[in-house]
Each structure stands twice: as structure tokens, then as C-alpha cells.
Image 1 (cartoon, rainbow, N blue to C red):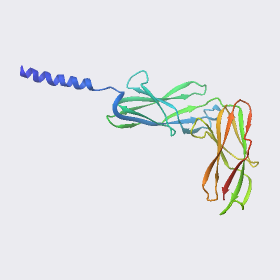
Image 2 (cartoon, rainbow, N blue to C red):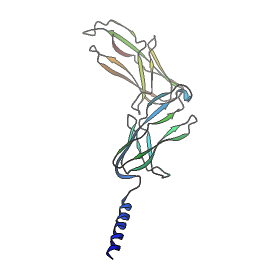
Image 3 (tube, rainbow, N blue to C red):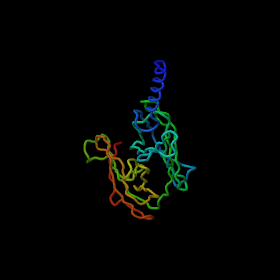
Image 4 (cartoon, one colour):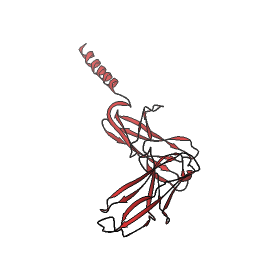
Length: 240
């Protein structure tokens, strides 16, 4: 009888231990993390020029093991990074949605295997975006005063329209600029194919100690097919 118990007890213990093992999902100590990059296609053209930036505030989804539906989702931070915490070991699929030229959304995925208590880094996910671009335009003007080893603002080395100076544009809901242009010889800059929304135009100026600072202008584009001109000239300082 004792021999039988000695055989049965290890078997029962093995069954009990196996029942405590958890499948993929939350409840562990592992971390799954990675980055998402956004590939922009000017003019909705997926064959020619592209521009790759970090994909901020993008939803990223995780599938546990062989499940047919995602188990959780998180949003990327300002650097396009995401993290799923407290995960059990196992195999996972991570995906985000990409936009095809016709506007259809498709999932772009990467698979990863997580060991117990470890941190698994997922290969970068590249998603594409080719939103229908707008028909409005934002224009403005930049004027520069040039200094060299100056101690006050009364003696500029020269002044005039800030030819070739860079100006940037960002959507107010996003952390990074999505386009930049250079000022023309007449001082004007133009952002074209803009959709309705709230935007910030910005460029950089310096003080006499050559410390850069940001100069911004807010523009609200309300309608398609219109020109929105910044009413006041942007004045900057450039040390040469």
C-alpha cells in the first residue's frame, strides 16, 4: 500500500503543478516592448518619395498564443514606443494597422517569444499612411536680422528676408512636425495640400549669445481650397 501511495503522490503533484502553469496572457512578470515607425507617402504616392517618422499615439495590439482575437492594446508614446507588462511566458503576435493607397486598413504584425520574467523586444513595425491630402495652403513671411559677435541689438551686421531659412509645421494633436519648407528670396514660405485642422507653424531664432529659441504661430484651417496667410511677419535673429 505504501509503495502505491509513493507512486500516486508524485503523479498527483505533477498534475497539480501542471495545472498551475499559465498560458500566454497577463499575470506574469515578463515585458514585451518595441517601436512603431510611420512611413508617409506624399501625394498618396506609394511608389516614389516617402518619409519615415516615429508613429506617436498609434494603437498597438497583442494576441496571446493561438487566440483568434487580440487580448489587449496600448498606445505608443511620443517616441513611437510601446510596452506590454506583466506577461506570462509564451508566444505572442503584435500588430498595428497600416493604410493602403485605397484607404483600406490592414494589420502589420510581428511575432515574438517571451521567456519567464524576461523582456522581449519586438522587431520594429512599419505602418504606412497615405491620407487624402487637402487643397488648402498656409503662407507666411520671415524677416531676419544678422549679427556677428554683437553685444547689443542696435548694430546688426545686416537684415532682410530670411532666404533659405527652414520653417516647420505640426498638427496641434501631434508631438512632431510632419513637413518643413525653406523661405524664398521674397521672404515667403508655403505649406500646400493642407487638410482642415489646427496647426502650429514654427521656426528658430537666436539671441546675441547664440542661444536658439522657438518662434511659433497658430493657424486654424477651416475650409478646403483656401489660402490662410499668417498676418504678421515672423522676425528672427541669426548669428553668422
